[in-house]
Amino acid sequence: MDPHRHAARRRRATVLGPLALALVQTVGTFGAARAQPDRRAPDLLAVLVAVAGPAALTLVRRHPVPVLAWVAALTSLYLLRDYPYGPVLASMVVAVVVTVVRGHRVAAWVATAAVVAVPLVARSTAPDHPWSWTAFTAVGAWVLLVLAAAELARTRVARTADLRRARAEARRREQNEERLRIAREIHDVVAHHMSLVNVQASTALHLLDKRAAGAQARNGAPEPTGLDGTRTALEAIKGASKEALSELRSLVDVLRDTAEPAPRSPVDRLASLPTLVARARSAGIATTLEVTGEQRSLPTQVDHAAFRIVQEAVTNVVRHAAAQRAAITLRYEADRLVVVVQDDGRGPAGLRAGNGIRGMTERAAACGGTLELTPAAGGGTRIDAVLPTAGELRAARAVGEGENT
Image (cartoon, rainbow, N blue to C red; front, side, top):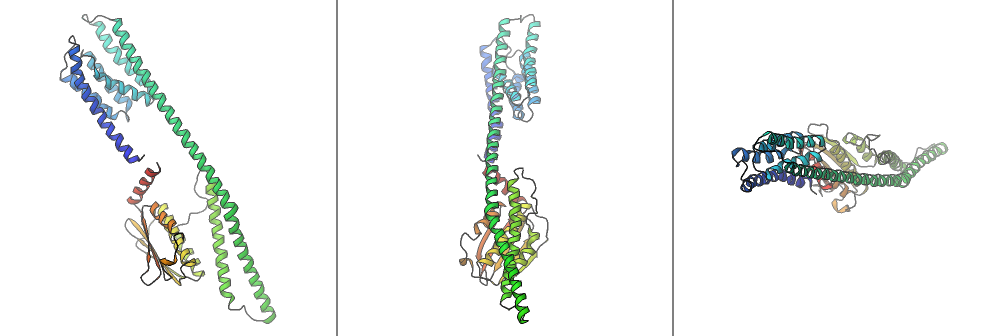
């Protein structure tokens, strides 16, 4: 259920319920007076009591004991004034039930005993109202019935809460098991193959150095020019695979740690962009980074999402765009961060839907932002991501929590 809708429904019930009860008690009091002509006729004080009790019930969830004391005092006043018995006692019943359910059982029993004892003692001392065991038994039976209903309601609420906690624990256990399974898959498959890539790149570089040294020793000639690009590519592969292994190990540690502490290695943020730019340059892409606006600390979610969007965009430039140049722009504005990545490659037509575009869009949407993929003005591809950094981010989180609920 949408939490906003649930909260609105609860607020309406908090107001409309007591309002309806006040109407019933007021009208019912005059109706009960017709059937009990020997009692005092309702007057302005009786009406005020009939309205004041339900009005106090609007606060009973937050302040059950003070509201119960107030309603008990009103009910005792009503009974001491010898007004007719009737629906006016419903406020006391509601206050007792809610107080017991909220865990204040002693207060509920004491308040109920006081409401019963005060008028009984007052009537027993009055010469025109002799003691009646029949009346005492009837009142006691009604009181026990109300308290029993309150205890049943408390037990049901407690069982519902226990069931809810058990279901939440089962969901957490399933999630932890799934996290461990994913961690095993990443460690056994992805990390294994990435380690092989790193080892093979290191071996190739070693063999390349050995061959160049041997050729120079035999012929006295330097390394052939054609091997410069090979060496650069192998060094880029080695560096990228090493960094990927580090990130994978950090991710596996986080997945295995079900208590979810802080990550054991720093999460990639925009501060790491110079390293990303250097890697892109080593892969043969002339990459620039421009930052405009007043740089400031960003929410972790926004900072991490912005870095991942730039990282995925640069990866697409290197692998799919057939570009020579790429430009990264970060524009800090009052309440948002604008990220622009532009290249001079083959344009959006050269990208498939699976080239990380969905992931970039989802990262932007998770922050309450947007991501747009368009052709660049001079040819190539342009990615514009707008990420809110203040109030809009809080609103996006609230909406996300509501949807998860």
